[in-house]
Length: 149
Image 1: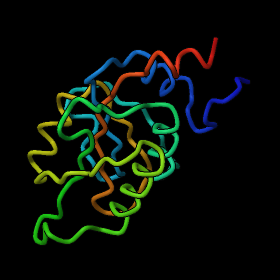
Image 2: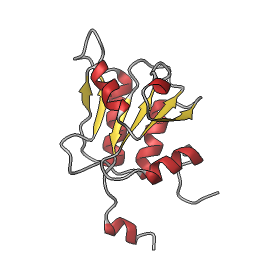
Image 3: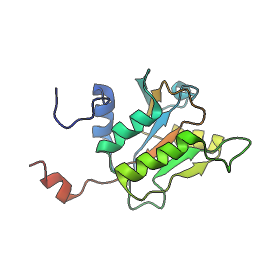
């Protein structure tokens, strides 16, 4: 057992986060997402919800402050102006854990194209529709690193 590690971060996901660098992206995908056919390595998080995984990841992962956008969600196909409740929840988690980052929306196929270039895809058991999120890794500052010495 390790201290200060979110309990939902299993060894595969913890390894993935540790190997990611500044600018790398990770996808949190719902149960309907075509995770295994897009190309990036898939980390299974069956039985876990997308909100819980987002919370766990953002407990440890900083978002990119140098990029104009560091988080994206999938837009609804027929009604892109509507923000699904789970995406509103994603925004609350991002704000609480990472700061003042707005989640941008991407059209469905644009989301798939971006996800195909991600470092990892976390395939959750999330049943809510459009519960897909991409997060861009930022940097850990020297001040943050010094706290653990």
